[in-house]
Image 1 (spheres, helix red, strand yellow):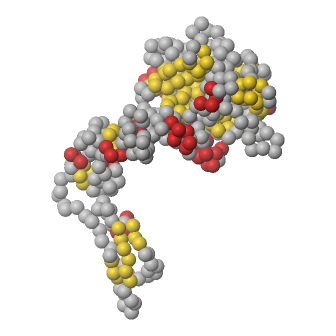
Image 2 (cartoon, helix red, strand yellow):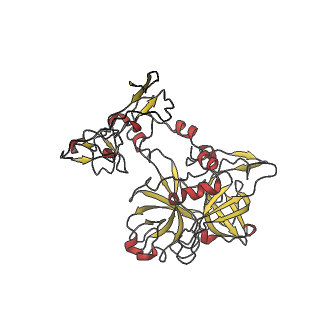
Length: 404
């Protein structure tokens, strides 16, 4: 407790809560604050002894021992001693982003790692109170979780709706869309919720009337009972898109709403939105993700059905493309060229799944040097790099609703 008094005034008392890492009282939490106007207020400042050796200097200026770093304990008070960790000590849990957590934070029902790794089934407790279940996940999220109800037959307008499965592998991806121009599938895209679709800017022109968006499409040239076809109301191409260099190769399509409705299509269990990532640190190099589309196969012919394949995120892609590789771009594929996106896949999704099973739109198929060439991985627009622009165009409520 602190008491201060100025000449001719009564004493006033207030409470200050400090945790030990603050540099001054201004950084502490002050309770029962009063307006002091121009009165004098005493302050205290913590300083280090001159000449003191510092093993690890925290961001806030505090010194801690190296043995206190990466042990899952916040000794600095600003967690800077638990970041950028190459390894862990004292039984700590290391997230893939290099942040170390205390072991008691693992499986406690609270996601601490960006990708939810600390709450994955591999690490969570068997205690029912702390185990993250699929049902709990689905109850909280409106995106990135495949709708299991799509496995069932649903009646809508007297027509049966089936989910296509070939060889036990789903070939219908619930957030994948086809963008049609002149009655042909021109590009792919990804549904992010509401009436919004993300695709590549090079796929789109300024005239919304030229395009239709097809949901729940399996065969490229033939709709099925669950397919929804929606007109485009408006086109939003990134203002800094460069068609020559493919910089900022991202566009948003706002779809036409149903008459007197806020929705752009009837409820459809075969359609689910993909989550929009808010940070570029969510997935690390070598993470396995998936790409999908109706593009050319190894035989050089466009696929008649939706295809998907697994690819790995590749770091330091500038060494393959030099100055052609710009900020906001990422690479994925196999360096031997065995798996790659190709012509006709453009605008489609690169999807990565976190440790608790939530899928994110990590990239948009943009460009590459040929198809499937060794040491020429596919180049994608990094969606997280444009999160603020996406939020600006779609509106904050739209993004948060589908990334709750």
